[in-house]
Image 1 (cartoon, rainbow, N blue to C red):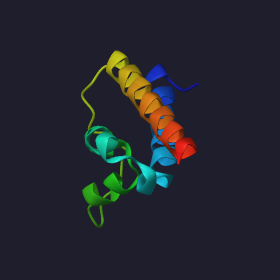
Image 2 (cartoon, rainbow, N blue to C red; image 1 turned 180 degrees about the horizontal axis):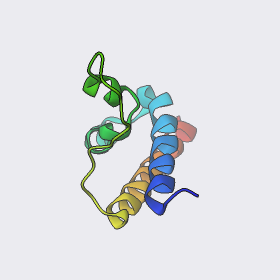
Image 3 (cartoon, rainbow, N blue to C red; image 1 turned 30 degrees about the horizontal axis):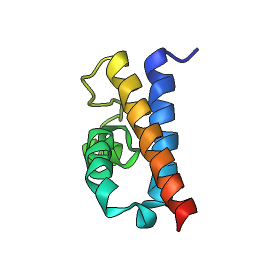
Image 4 (cartoon, helix red, strand yellow; image 1 turned 135 degrees about the vertical axis):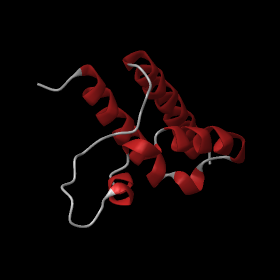
Length: 93
């Protein structure tokens, strides 16, 4: 059974993928917000694991995130709001 943190990390990655697919249509006034959220959630990306890998050593899947479950929940909310704003600007164009 996944923990609350694992569920929230999954949501972060799903929403982030949706926004990333639309990254070329993110308005300039939202670019700073996207950049900040992207940096905050970079530790959850699967390629972050490859940067920590050492040849010949067993790889343990660890995430370098020091925030709480509440912090994760706030990240999910911020990503959802950003995704909604990007969707609205796509419809308007």
